[in-house]
Amino acid sequence: MFSNQLLIFLPIKYIYKMKKVILTFTTFLVLILAISSCDWAKDKTKKTLNKTGEIVGKTGSEFGNGIYKGVKKTFENDVKISDQLKAKGLELGEIVINSSDSATDNVLTAYVIFNDNFDQEIVIKIFNENGKEYGRLKEKLNGEKGDAKHFDFTFDKRVNIGMKGSIKIEQID
Image 1 (tube, rainbow, N blue to C red):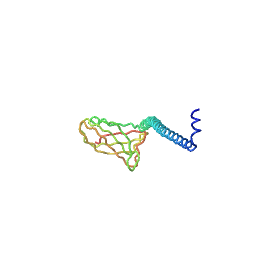
Image 2 (spheres, helix red, strand yellow; image 1 turned 135 degrees about the vertical axis):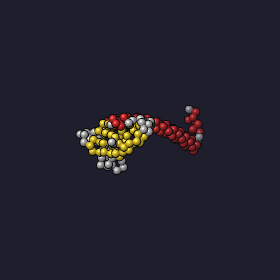
Image 3 (cartoon, rainbow, N blue to C red; image 1 turned 45 degrees about the vertical axis):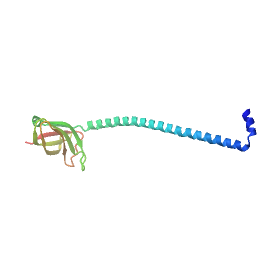
Image 4 (cartoon, rainbow, N blue to C red; image 1 turned 30 degrees about the horizontal axis):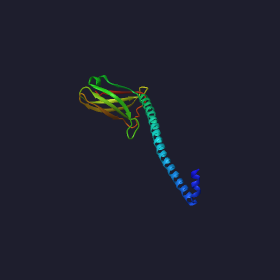
């Protein structure tokens, strides 16, 4: 009641100024709340996107790993090293089929382990799944006992090492 009586005695221009101050103050408070809630929303959105990205990344990684294993199994060739080369201390690790700059799947990358000193020319023959030879390469290998290293055997650009078949590594007599 008292506040209503006070307003009656105040001139109208002061009432308008008070309304203006109250309106300005209220607008200022609303803006501060909006800005602080925007930071909160932005932070929440960022955390949600990061978590979603992490989940998608893990799923994509597992999917990609599955594809890699499937492709790797598809490209498994029967790789045989001759008994003569084994007796001379030559052993093979992983064999991978790669591409050169000018051709597709014409590079055989082999991890070769030397259990004895070795310095000799070898021949690598590639056969299709029907046993027909379609690639041959002579190469000199050189390594000391205890060494192991990768060798890239680049075949003719017309040789496309197939998905199925066999690879034989033999010594040259």
